Image (cartoon, rainbow over all chains, first blue to last red):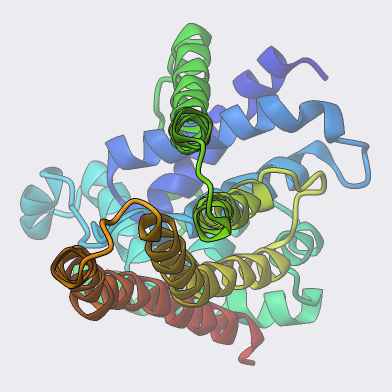
Length: 156
Length: 196
């Protein structure tokens, strides 16, 4: 697969995973770019042991984790739109609230739920994280319950 | 109370225009350049230091064995420090296989533990070798009067003491705090993975 095609196909997905992790558009863009630089550099090492998606998501997830090392800018920024959303939960507000809520979860849960929302199969998520599929299923269920509760409070 | 919020639909509505590929490639070459400059600078400093010391050897033609041992110790101290330091830099870069998060965390932790070793043990060895080397080296060139010996060695000793008792522990402590907090964070993440 050519790098250009990979970039076109996976940019949005990788960017969203990064955004779910940090909830800061510029920062997410940086992580996504670093991910694709790694993809570009390592593409010749990819031997089809897994699907290309799993391989790319592994790189993206690892890059997300490494943000811990970079600095202490772990304070979450929120979208300006959120202020308006407090009063009227419109679509934009809901999207912003979802990303904000995910970025407030523990690091591992952020990655798992982002992959799930990207329609990555649970078997693949298990390969990316290094856990059993059953474990992933339970974790996803719990995270969704948490998010639903948050959303219900938000919409009230 | 709704249990049917379509999170997937909301999630995927977030669209971001991908940056042009040229932007990505220029960022890649910028990062590569930065790494290259760092490596080249480190090597230049190393080579220059060694060259100066060897130059002194050739120019002043030391007669005493203490001077020669001193020079060897100083060179050895510098090289061993940089050698160990350079061993951790490519630690994760050379990984051919992309690790899963669990394995990756284990590697990151190992890397930081290695760094911790360098910050403490290697730093101590480096200082001891360097001090010993300088003391041995100086012996030949210090005029052999009580005053000059005590003055020269006194000042040098004071300088090394300042480094050893003040600057070194301060630097190590600061680095250790940072590294330890990262290791703690990695452990917490590992716990997130293993907890049921």
